[in-house]
Every structure is written in structure tokens, then in C-alpha cells.
Length: 197
Image (cartoon, rainbow, N blue to C red; front, side, top):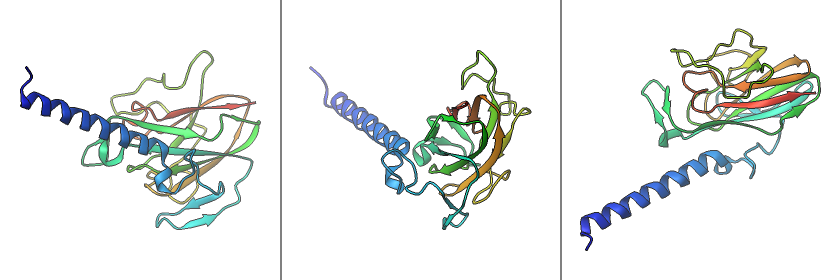
């Protein structure tokens, strides 16, 4: 016969797992934050600045919307905002773009700062295979550009939660890895594929 304590332990574990699954689904969907069912902003050419105010921008070339997701308060972040493990993702609204001018716009719907770095993907390699150094980052010496400025273009200190940033680059045909290279974010799953044809 099972003891009452064991039964309550099982009930508690089931409740904890249910809450975890619900929070991951919420973080990966993003629909509760004013995003469409697919996690994309309703207006593709809208960016939000550091205050969260929306502005219209005319981006050059092909636009690729990228959404940065993390588990926020339900994840494992240290006191300085560094990610210590758990689910983080980059999702893009398209994988294929034509050769030429491409603008990547990062929408940060997570709870931590994020960025995107554009890295050529060598033949025979897949996204997520780069070696992570002791600093929690991958080598980005061959980066073709990055978006890490809240409410603006190019490099900065990271795109704050609730804001966007973007980068416009010229891309030749090939395969590219779009990655967040903030400490431990790549290892937590923040990368996606971009194919230029």
C-alpha cells in the first residue's frame, strides 16, 4: 500500500512538470506578448526601441525576422544575467533568401539580452556544431555582421528584452549560421540556418 506522503510527492512532481511544460510552451510561442500565432510581430517592418516604443523602418533588401526566446524567470539565469542552462532558441520566419542585400531583424521576446551574429557555415557542417570556448562563446572572427543594439542597427551591448535590433549585409550564395553569441547562449540552443541562393 502506498503511503500518503508518496502519493503527495507524485502529485507534486506531476504539477511541477505540467508547470514547466506550460512555461516552455509559453516562451517558445510568444503569443502572449502580442505576437502572432507563429511568434512573429504583426508588422514586419516595425522595430521597438529601448523604451519599447514602436517605430516604422524601411529596411533594405530581403527582410528576415528572427525571434529570440528564453525561459525568462523560469530558466536558470545567474545574478548577472548569464544563462546557466535550459531552453533558449532563435526562430526565423524564413530560411531561404536571394543573393544580395539582406536585413536580419532580431525581436527579443525573452527575459535576457540577446544578439544575432552572421557566420558562414563551412561545407559539411550543420548549425549548432561550433565549439564553445571557456568564455561561453564561439569564434566569431569570420562574422559578416551582427545586430546587438537595442532599437538600432549594428553592434551594441545586446538587444534588451522587448526591443529589436537589426543588421543589413550583402550575402553571397551559401549557407550561414545565425547565432546569439552572448555567454552560454549558443550552447543553450540559440542558432538557426540561413540559406542564400
